[in-house]
Length: 433
Length: 145
Image 1: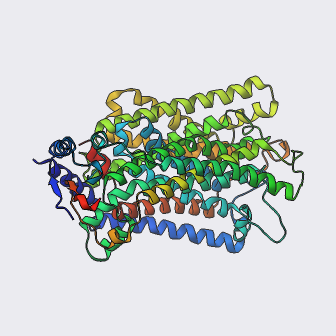
Image 2: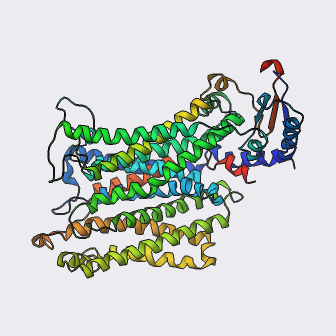
């Protein structure tokens, strides 16, 4: 077989995913769109009636919306780890995951960006968060962690979009070749007239290297900044120096789990077994196991810090987390994030794709619950013992609806991606064929 | 326009490229199109430095300087003490400057790539010669130099 035939086959097999959608795809899409619609309806209800429809109760004034924000920003992190960090380390298995992971990063950040707005009492003045010249000559408070968030997440989103798009350019030129009519025009414009000349490849490789280098520090910095939203306060359970590395490890952990959750069904449905092998899954399972160990270590350390710190409020908070109102969630978190991933020490289980998929689902649940436990249980046990047991925060249907809507939005965007853009990095795969 | 030589095997393509260079064809006249980045091409033909890094450095440096200038000057324009912290609080401003360093660096590198690669090319968007997954060598006629 001529070498180019091998490449043609790769083009055909990977681009087959962009074919006419089947009934199952449309059914799943209809379901996720329904979730989005109900989420927006709930948000509209909150917009009309006010933030009172959320279950906030003093002193729990940050809850599910902020949990979702931290969760989705965290999900985004693994995409950058796989596409940028593993690129710099020349890890070859990244080529099987980088495109879905980069798409996941962009979509997760789009979803995450909505939550600070949903959480605002007056979402229509959200632009107060941005530093812009105004008549009153007022500027934002650059010493506030919330403004750091705007800069960190804004930069992260922009750089991720550029990185995602740059990776797509040579692949879009391949799609252009296979399409006709208006589709050909659209992909021609998107591929910018890419030809694959030596000059283009030389500058492209340099661009990719530099973008990877710029994106790599973001893996550590963005979730550190998000963690400082909490750690800069004096609240027991939040005010701790380990928050930045703890959050970064958690972000990579949850993001890796989400990559597995997305790629396992994608490989099965789109028949991509030739390009995403069990070896690749085993490598990514090792990242999952490694980050799980870091997260578990952080759980132990923060409890140890409270124990040896001698602060009664801090000690009471950690007792409350494990044995108080939210104990079921705390133990769910420990089970899903620390205990279940330990089974991945067994090679046989790391290579069992169905099992790995189940573990990834549990980790997704565990990491969402972890953020809820950190945020809500800490606020519920602050310095005001009078309210400790008089009222308990419970999410309302509006918060649940918006949360489900966010999952719906993420999966809707991902499903649209599957049918409109190449699901794997074709040119990179050809390099290794 | 010279007739392109089309190859379906990478090794055959590289062999021809090496032969052309050995025969003394001016390297500037050789135009190569590949379906993916082929490292050997850069070894055979003279390594031309990519100036994309100049854009990366300029963008990143302007982000750092701009980030500090923006935070310091805007707080000085309304010197209000918040939370007992100094008006010019360098540690939090580092975070803003860091974010802008990355942002401007990445955007400027992308812009540099577009300029140096002459993209987007309207002419190529409208009609591009498609070679599929073949490796292509075109030797431009001498007078075209």
